[in-house]
Length: 104
Image 1 (cartoon, rainbow, N blue to C red):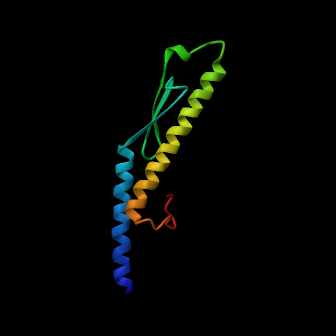
Image 2 (cartoon, rainbow, N blue to C red; image 1 turned 120 degrees about the vertical axis):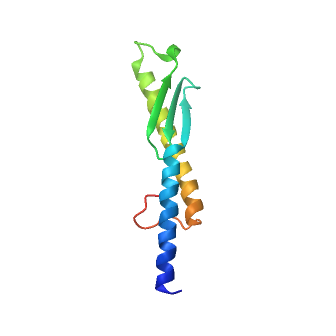
Image 3 (cartoon, rainbow, N blue to C red; image 1 turned 180 degrees about the vertical axis):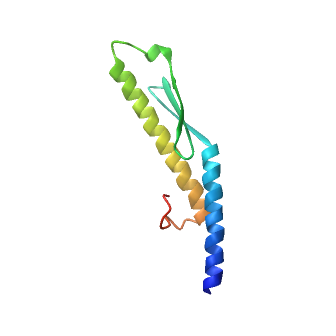
């Protein structure tokens, strides 16, 4: 394979990766904890966009439980976003794995 063709292919892949990243930022994942008492929504790129807390779980005498539920929900939403990223980028890269300089 000649170097010019390799450069052209690399440029095409870079364009596909940029498009996939843009699409990820427009997708949403959702995770919940405490049996649905806390729900966290994140973009496919991992940004947390919403946290919903059921009023029944708010207890001034047990703030620590609420903190744990929120933290758990955030972690699950971020993990779901990472999985979506890996799946999406895997399709773009053809399963080549992580590319140098790319955070996937």
